[in-house]
Length: 457
Image (cartoon, rainbow, N blue to C red; front, side, top):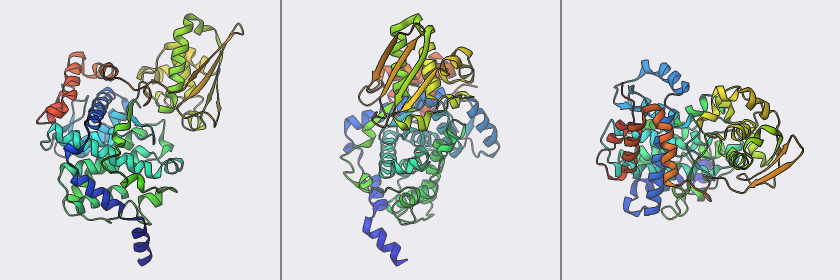
C-alpha cells in the first residue's frame, strides 16, 4: 500500500488536478475560437445522430433495451421513441457513430462528440440546461477525453482498445458532472468511476458493436457523474494510480498531456469533421480517387488496376479485402477506392450492404492492391491507375479534405447535415433542426433543440 501511495505521489495528482479544472473553469475563460469550434462540433454531431437513426443497428438496440427503460424523459435524435436519460444517451451515441461519419480528433483518432454530446442532449430533456451551459460542458468533456487519449496514444490503441470508448467515458463523466455542479472531490470520484468502466475493443470494428462503444461511454459517463453526486466514492487517483486506467490499459503514460497548460492549450480546438462516412485513414484514398474520377470521366470503366501506397496503419485498420456488409465496407480501403472511382461516392450510400455486393464494384475492388509504406504519412496516399490500353496516371494526396489543413467549412457541414437528416426527419424539419443547432449558445433551454430533431410519430 505504501508503495502504491509513493508511486502515485511521484507522478502527481493527475485526477485531482483535472477534476479541479473541470469544476473551476469559468465559461468566459474559454477562447471565442474554441467556443466556435465547440459549436461546429455540436452541429456536426447532431446531423450524424439524426442521420444514423434509421440504421438497423439502432432498431436492434431499441428492441433489446426498450423493455428495461425507466421514465421516458428523453428522446433519441431522428426517432419517435422516448426513453430514460441513461438509455437515450446510449442510443444517441449509437446513432451518431453508426455511419462512421462523425468528428475526429486526428492526433488520437478519438471521435469526441459521440460520448459527450449524446449524454448532454439526453440529460437536457430530464432537467433544464441552458444552451450556453451545454456548450461549455461539451467543450470541457471533449477537452478531457482528448487529453486523456493523448496521454496513452498510440500504445493504448495499438493494444487493441477502441479509444473513443475508453477515453470517451471520461469526457461524458466530466461534462455531466459539470452540469450537476459536482464539487472537486465528487468530480474526482466521477472520473474514477469512469476509469473503472473504460472499455471498447478494436476487434469489434466492422460490426454493430463499434457504435455501441461511444453509446456505452455516454451512458456510463452519465452514470458515473450521478453516482458521484449521490456520494458513491471511488479512488481519487483513478487515472494515474499504479493499477489505474493509464498503467493498466497502456504502455505509455504521458501525464503532462492531461494536466499541462490546462486552459491555454485547447485540444477541443483541433477537432475535425469527416466528408466521408468511413474510417478516417481511408479519406485520402477516397479524396484522390474522386479527383481521378472527375478528370477521366467515362475512362473509369476501362481501369485495369489500382495500386495504393499508404501508411501501414491504413492496412491495419481498413485492410478488409472482401467486406460482406456495409459496416465492414467502412473498413475496406479496397471497397472505398472502388466506390469512389465508379460511383463518385464516399457518403453513407457508399457503405450499404447493397453497394458492397454490387458486381461492378466487387470487380474493380478485386483489381485494387495496397502496399504499406512506412515513409508515407497516415494522412497521405499515392495512387497509381493503369488502364486497359496500358496508359497510367498517378495522384498524390498530401492531406485530404476534412483534415485540419483542409477543413470543412460551415457551409459544407450544413450540406452534410441536411443530406443526412432530411432522409430521416424530412427536409423542412431538418432545415429547422439545423438552424436551432447553430443557435445552441443562445437558447435558454437546450431541450428545445433536442425536441426539434426527433421524428414525429
